[in-house]
Image (cartoon, rainbow, N blue to C red; front, side):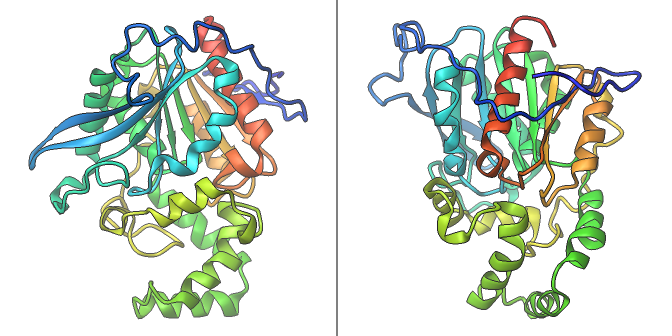
Length: 344
């Protein structure tokens, strides 16, 4: 995988796209070794207690594999989705020898779902991630934090406060500014839609009829299969369907807002574009050509980080780990290996 772009003042690599399958390592006995693990009986699952201003709750995690120097904690999107839509990692990380952790954030399907609206705040989620890190024993010698969509936002916030614990950082399909995301949706995505359909969608949103089957039908046909996952909806993989079915609106709507064509919740003013240079941890930004997020902005982000790289998925959308899978995982695994041996 060669590098093709170098931006002055930072380390920025644009991984070229190939049709080669991700390189694999034979799964060794060491990778399968559970010696000393306290999660063997549960198949790697651990329920971690989380202290919050509203009391103690538990979040669900699941470890796969064993690698002392590479441990990836996966932050799912939403907010309020579950880890399930990211289960494509099972097809690539084990053969690459990467130890990884699925994790359902508080309020998500496999974790506790307290009816405490005050808990759905970005700073509290950051402290939750730190408590999970401590409970799993992850450290600067081995800790890679991966965040997709909302998980990418959460990963940026975590790195700004706790980057001393990180070995590597991956921001997948997430812009560094919600105002910039809303502008991209308004100036690029919505004008490209069938305007009659867009008007009908906006009528449903104005009437707050978000649960109307017709509203979701229009979004699926004219937005989701174009910018979320570029496959016919009938062919969406089972993990993706489960992830959508298990979304918790009590978490999603207060933070993101009810509309699928822009953010309007508590996060509407979130913008970290001026702060990315403070993150010195080796960082990979993953963008996709047909994403609901602006790929040019995500490429810019890689240059704004002090030690950033950019992976572009030319056939991908918001879930590029499915619709541009080989390029996605090839670049992701290469980045992790490069950081592990000090090449990044």
